[in-house]
Length: 185
Image (cartoon, rainbow, N blue to C red; front, side, top):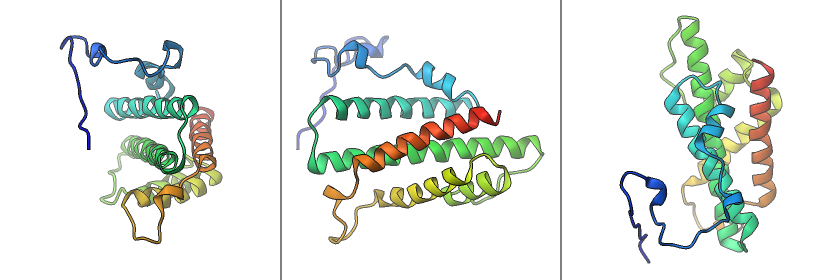
């Protein structure tokens, strides 16, 4: 397999890395800046978590443009869908962790030892009303899909397991999550 080739032109300006290569997207199709997404996710208290969410949002935008602008099909399409769904799940999990931690800190409480996605979803919905019932059900099912990150036996076919319809629903629910957060603040 071919290895990745990286060319660093200027160590002071990382945006010039690989500038000897052809541009993948025209300027108008480049992902929004991380600052744009940090503003959208300003309700996340931990700056590091907010920055990581912003970077994942840029990656989601990149993958979406990649799919929408280039012919991608069959196995690569399915695996690109998987990557997007896993990223959405990771964003939600990080956001819920931060939000629950913030609520608990304000109340003088500590986080539980168990902070897996299932526990966070349950607390976010049942205890703190940080998500509505629709989002709780959807993200609980997405959590199950995320568990497919691990390669499975022969009866699970990665080349056809993930669909555009599933991804579009994930992106819609991610937008719904953001809208819900803005509505409760």
